[in-house]
Figure 1 (tube, rainbow, N blue to C red):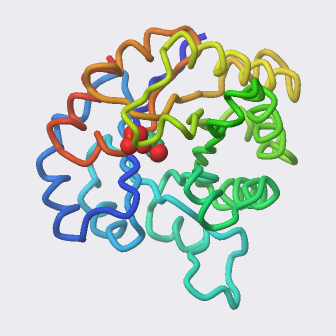
Figure 2 (cartoon, rainbow, N blue to C red):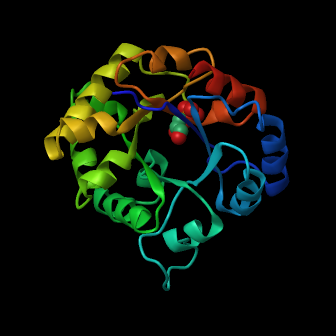
Length: 251
Ligand SMILES: O=C[C@H](O)COP(=O)(O)O
């Protein structure tokens, strides 16, 4: 089963609209590599300009969050209906920063995942353990619980479309990356969890990324592992040359 590698930059809370459009002008063409899917997940404010700039290119634009309702009295929130209307394709759901700083529970992650599909958005669902969970040997159990919760209520067709990002929290922005063998071990396990929820055929279609201090110099090592289909990249996705190198490294 061949899965198209997917490299997604998660800009987090970085870049004004003008910085985002300048970035895009630099990567256009160069970050479009046959056989690799390139995604940029930007702050809400930069999405309209990026969607416009990305027209006619193969670079997909994603958001970093979505509310699970379509409309309502939810001050400060943005719905899947609104993102779809903008022309956004992907949305990151359940990033560890949102789980930690914005109290996003497994239940909320699931509601957001269901809402993404309702509006034709592809969710990039993040799972991963904290340092103390790793040290106590709970990594796989934590990933199992988070994965099973996120997929609840999804049809087999929807499940096959989900992109999962395994991000050990202790490796995010720290320069301490998981070894590729270790990431493979956990990601292979997550694929098994999905097979348990559906079947082997569905699990074989799901793309699972590694995230956590991925850089141009280590991306190919991760992608060389059997079950790792891409990367969700924070810091190294912010500079055009580095972003292009990540895409090149995923070939
Ligand atoms: O979403 C991306 C991850 O949080 C990884 O961030 P990082 O590449 O800066 O470690």
